Image 1 (cartoon, helix red, strand yellow):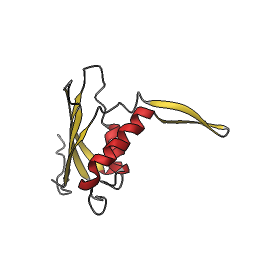
Image 2 (cartoon, rainbow, N blue to C red; image 1 turned 90 degrees about the vertical axis):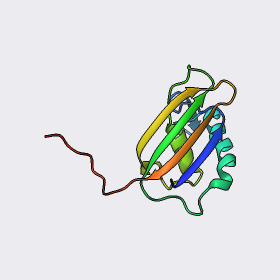
Image 3 (tube, rainbow, N blue to C red; image 1 turned 30 degrees about the vertical axis):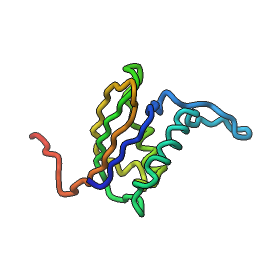
Image 4 (cartoon, rainbow, N blue to C red; image 1 turned 45 degrees about the vertical axis):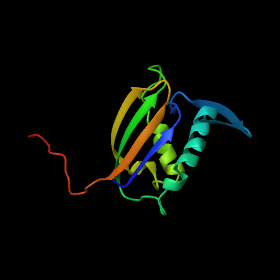
Length: 128
């Protein structure tokens, strides 16, 4: 394992958390206040666990997402944005394999995330 952390708080769905704003004469779609807040709170939580340099290798991500209820969509995209914004990985495109699990914890919503290196020698067998 390269990196692991527990990020407290309800992970919001990126697809359901966009807002339209005007920047001058151009309308733009940006993250919601809840999404930006989750990113900011996550940055404080991973501050001491950040690597000296962002990871540049391709990785497999395992995320166990605990929501407050079953109403939320299982959506890890904001987590991937956070890993890049927090300086854990250089770019979220490096996440080449994902294992995502969703559970309910009404009292303590959180995300348990770990990154593992991907062996470049491994190939997916193709059936003939």
